Image 1 (cartoon, rainbow, N blue to C red):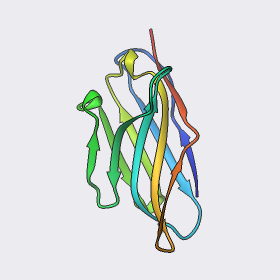
Image 2: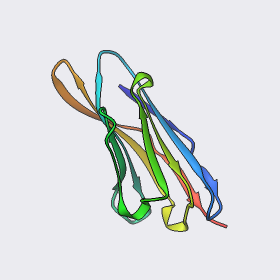
Image 3: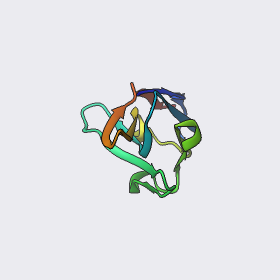
Image 4: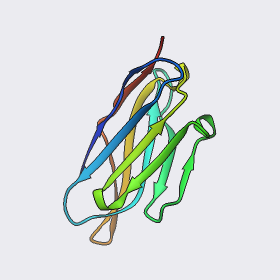
Length: 118
């Protein structure tokens, strides 16, 4: 399974970005799709996740500003980021937990840089 991310970039405070992540490969079913981020000098943190059943959860730090959504048919997850702040600057990684042949595996995207600066 390979994950390919897109959508990062430079944006001014208050602006918006939409991140996308799509998985390719054979014979897997998705359990959970998530976005993490890692700022310089900080640990990687969970931003939001969505389950195969459609349940979502977002971190308190981004609640009301970020929205996660998933498309199981396309094996894709999206993160709509609005009202961006400088403290949202980080490398954002998508993360999938999938099941293949009764075993569970997890995979990471390559990361995409989001920079919020004037």
